Length: 68
Image (cartoon, rainbow, N blue to C red; front, side):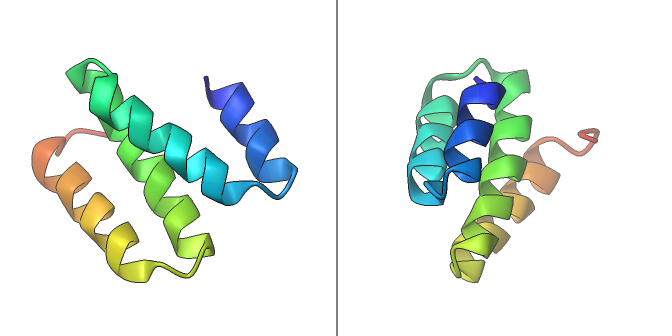
């Protein structure tokens, strides 16, 4: 999954990559959500959507304090 998302980002399709992360977040087993939330937040920052990025980062920190 990460490889496919990275290819989207590399090809300039960051919005599509963010959408894929959103699907992952909705359907992934709980421990995997932290990675998706953090990575999607990074893309949201790049897309100029800092409020959404911050919400993802805060949720990730709150729900997965041992992530990273």
